[in-house]
Length: 494
Image 1 (cartoon, rainbow, N blue to C red):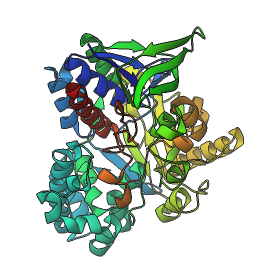
Image 2: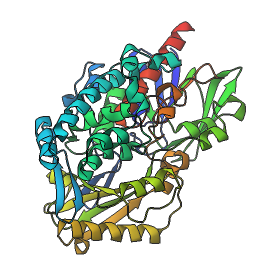
Image 3: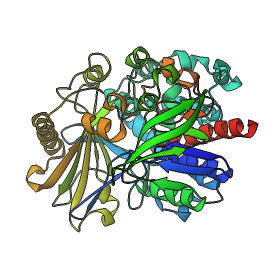
């Protein structure tokens, strides 16, 4: 039986391992952290349970499809709740907009704010749905071997969306600044300026508004727990707190992985027949001698990265008012904020930020009468920071939430913990401490992303957010499926 080594137990690594184990291979995951899931983690403190990574559960059909591939259902592992409103957006003091779960109600909200805008939104969603189907259900699951993969009948018919930008389309048809921000915000959070991002990516808006925003009862970290349970049932062996140091190559093949057990300090060398790395792509290549790498330092230096983040995990000793499970605070200039991420990387003066208050939906994750607050500021990758800077941002955020929602919260903070660029780099070997991989611009889409296939090593493949198909948890699951399919083809030929 062929022995396959999967480096990294994040979502793409777990997905890869499950698909390869299903095919009958001997699969082992080696993970640096104490738990699997990568960025999808949990922080527990004083009875509070924080999701440390993604909080928006979108594209539910893709998760269902994954578990269906193994004869399972999502409901075998966790329960889902659809949020209504999907989220709330603050534009100023006591000036907010709630986006309902029902798509027809969304059209009505737009029409109330700007008469005639719903007609454009319906057309926008119709094309966005088409893009979703061609991206998710067709092109996105194809292997990235050639440029021809992107040129399908669907994409040829929709070439205008590839050449146009989200910003230009929205600004041409929507006058309300509030509605513009609502339609543009998914792009900012997932990597790109709206005027640099291909209109094709409006399928994210379709997933956001039409397919809904969901919540896993107990928290998003239930997903990797479910995938780990599935992997173990398929025979996957898992080693955590294991740091990969080197991939040894002999005659064009990866033959050995060398790692250190972080609990014991023991150094271990394992023979292998095939390697899939779901660790950060740039880091993965440092495990190889320079002659075997796909990309140079110059290549990586020239990539446009999606944001990193400054995150605060806050425990409040009271229930908060006038906020929803997901709340966006857009009382700032989004263009100026985007410039600090993509044009001249620096810390923003007055950033847009996002707040998640999951204990509004789920009482089990916080002590009775108390509230969880997770606050995220998108920032440029590669920035340096210090405790004084973090504290200044925390005070700014608390002051703005107080002003916007008309309630006292600073005196009700029980504790806070922060996480930013430095921790992303340390915990995930993330290139420049990025949180979301590569920006979603046309020149970094599909076949133009870093390749899954090693150019110089016949039995090494890459998966994860820096390769195909891109940023987010659903794409990470798909990435694992694609790379597993590639691995099976290669192994069956031997």
